[in-house]
Length: 110
Image (tube, rainbow, N blue to C red):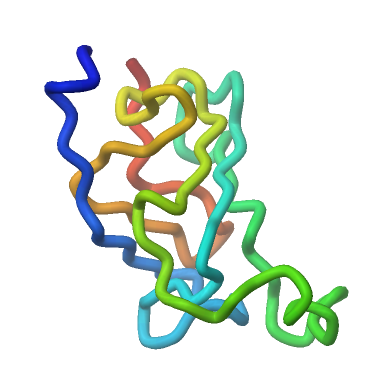
């Protein structure tokens, strides 16, 4: 896929309701990071920006995140086999983070 063929959306939908960055399904981390370098399926991916409410590190997050709405241009994706990943940038029309395990529900294997 050529870079000129890719259209980037601004839509990020977070269903990880236990994450402190989730505000009415909007991610307020400012930036998110998706891991899964060798992932071949959704459960092998993860949003490493996910922090469970009341979990470890909860009190120190102001040093790392800016509490602004995350846009797709602020997603760093290491899921190398995802068809929406181009040079670690996400080009999916809508990004969805799973509620149960903070995986990337948008992941589709090449």
